[in-house]
Length: 442
Image 1 (cartoon, rainbow, N blue to C red):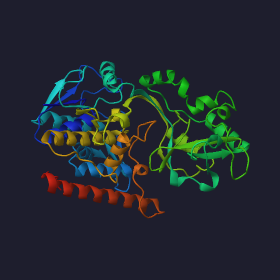
Image 2 (cartoon, helix red, strand yellow):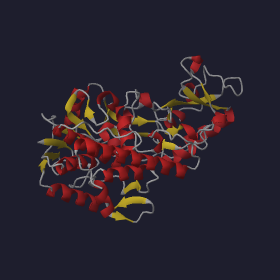
Image 3 (cartoon, rainbow, N blue to C red):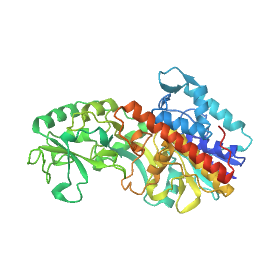
């Protein structure tokens, strides 16, 4: 019997993959006896923030992700399509109908046993932990015991932009005092630019906090939102993350008035984060205000800054790209606790974990999804030891390997990336079918 802990999107997808392979699975969920602060319904796979599962077209990161999941036998993507409502190019669902459909399919599957109880200790045997970003305190402490200090309870992250969207004429590469190997991208500000940015920042609108997020702000004094820091005085940022000390702008030959630094987010250098810019501003406000930074006028934001309650592992230290724990081959993690961010991203990690748990039981080699796929790129982000300062990530085109040729038209480029990913997935499944006899369907 394989145990899956948590009946959110990741847990349901994992349990479904195991059951569809003909193996018995026990799916544990503490509802209806107990709910997290974010959940209210007694059904599985509850959508609590939005009824939109993002874009459905293939030439988008969310659409590419869903296409890959459907090709691999997803439960949730067909359920989403069956309960869809009109929303332009997005896949929006009637969220209660979606949750009810998933629940009915899970409960009626002959290979799935439902256990309505809170799990306080990690069971012996083969287990997939998919307990989400609001994991109950008792189990969270149990997870912390096996993970050491590699478990975070709050997510304070800065925005991430694509390298290719920056204006080369406004930036320069250097580390402070010439140390390192020009590791940072620097966006220099003259005094008028800084003052305009400062006024826009302190006047920007913050996102409302949920009750369970408010505790986060009590632990962020050492990781303060940039807008809160700015409100402490006009020059506070210039003595903090925007200090120009140790830097010379090669365009002017002198030290700038202020400098915003960007640090490489991934090994390939396709993504950069804004150093010290953890924030609780609304996403639209982040785009408006941070685009005022020299070099970022046309920046493509792959992730906006967030500050909220979010239990997640330092997965690169702990997990492989199959979501298996490096030190325990019987224990897998799935969902937002691994550091994937978003509904379908969580479900996708559950799908990959479930498939690989099945393969481990059946004695088949692990399924390592190609980096060119969105599922594979997310799995690589979760498991890449380069990520020393690991932060959660959702599906975006910036985490995919670059194309061999440069395509300037964004839509054409994204379609080329998606088609390459689907071709890589098909090639893998064809090879795997020939080697292991696995039937992948059509």
